[in-house]
Image (cartoon, rainbow, N blue to C red; front, side, top):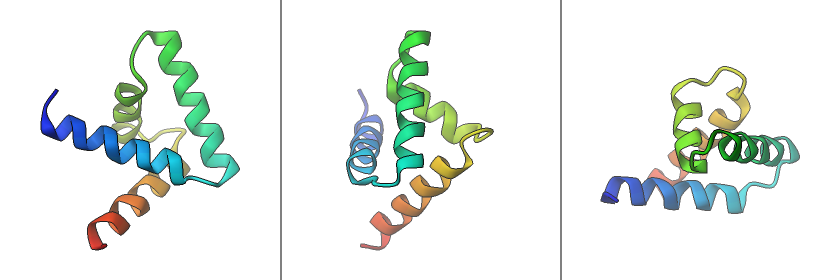
Length: 73
């Protein structure tokens, strides 16, 4: 695993842990279920969602806000 992949996984893990909105948590759960059905990792599925936001605008928006807050901290 590359350093970039490792950093992405840590960032996604932290986002999942700090997320409190029921809608966001539901979307995260949905992505996890879809990933398991497809036989891919949650992180691979999350990458797909970040690249193609159709149907997941709220989750992507919240993640971008989270990433920006981490950059400025």
